[in-house]
Length: 64
Image 1 (cartoon, helix red, strand yellow):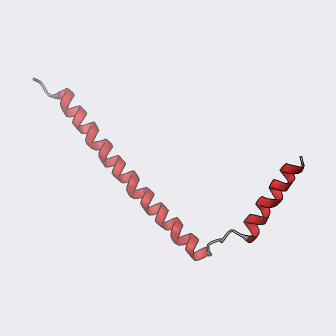
Image 2 (cartoon, one colour):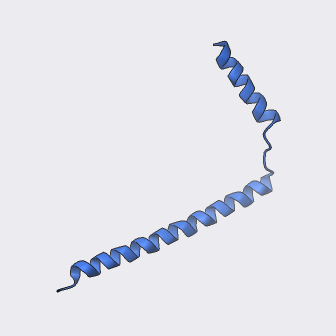
Image 3 (cartoon, helix red, strand yellow):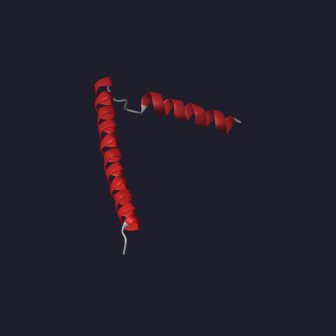
């Protein structure tokens, strides 16, 4: 039990004294960047999926 308490104390000490926390403006900028990158990635995946869907539909609906 002593090791668990020591580990929790060490973790708390590191979070309070050794971690460099970003400023609020930096956090906002990073969040916006992640949001925009996620939207671009989602749109790219959607376009690729749409292309595959149209290709499969064309392939199966073509009469040979």
